[in-house]
Image (cartoon, rainbow, N blue to C red; front, side, top):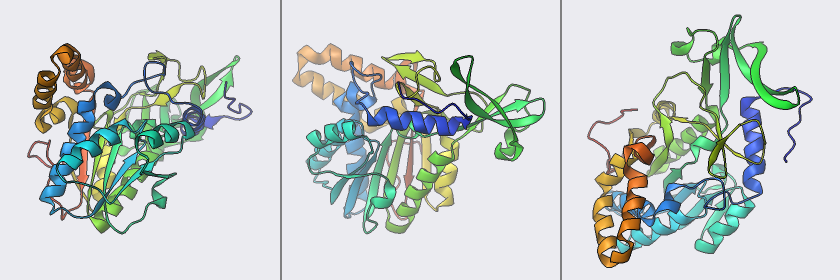
Length: 345
C-alpha cells in the first residue's frame, strides 16, 4: 500500500493529489480487470460521436489546420475511434497530442496511437495552431479542497491518522474567505468543495483557444454549482470504497462543478455551451442512427449494441449524471449537440 505521511495533517486536496499520482503511475485502472470503465471502453459509438462533433466543427470553421489534444486519454480508445471517424470526412489533424503522466497508460496509448506525442502537462504543447481539446473524465480526478462549517466558522478539512486509520476532519485555521460567498451561510457540518486545479487547467486551455482558435469538449459527471455537499468518492474493482482506507490503491474522484469551469473559460474570453446531459448530446449527434447502421451490419451483435447505447444514454445510467460542455473561440462556429441557449452553465 502507498504510504501517505501521517506525521502531519494534509489538506484533502494534497491527499487526493498524492494518492492519485501514485495510483495512476502504477497501473492501467480501466476495464473488467481494473477498477472502473469509461464511456469509450463501453462502446466505439462514443468515440465516433466525438469524431463527428470534431469533423463537423472543423468543416464549418473552414477546414483550418488544428491539433487533436486529449487530456487524460485513458487507453487511447476514444482518440482512436474519433480519429478514425474524422478521417472519413477528410478531417486529419496536424498532430495528435496526449497529456498523460502515467507510464502504464502511455504504453497503452502508444500501442493504439503510435503517431501520438505525449506531454506531461499543457505547458509542453506548441501554441502555433488551433487545438481541439477533448477531456473525457479528466476534471473529476483533479484535486479538490473541502471546507466544513464548524461552531467556530469555516475550516479546511484535513486528512490525518486517527485511531490507526486516515480520516478527514476540520482543521484549526479559519477559512471563511475560501468559501464562495453564496455558500457561506450554512448549518454546522455542511461541506463545500472548490477545485482551483480544475479551474486553472480550464483557464489555460481557454487562453489557448482565445489566442489560436479551436474548441474544447469536456465530458464528466457533475453538477452546476454553487452547491454544498461532499462528493469525494473512491472506486476499487468497480465498487465504491472508503476514500481514506487504501490511499494510492483506489481511484479518487469528485463531482465536477461545470459552472466553475464555465466561469474560468469565459474569463479567458471564450464562449461556453452547456452543460447538457450526455444522453441528450449523444442523441443530437446521431448516436441512434449509428446504432442502427452497426446493428444492420452485424445483426448478431444488435442486442449488445443496444445495451451499450442504453448505458451511455439512458437517464438511470450515464445519460443524466454525465454532462457535456463545449468551449470555443469567439471566431469559431457554434459546436453541434447543444440547445440554442448559450451559456447555460
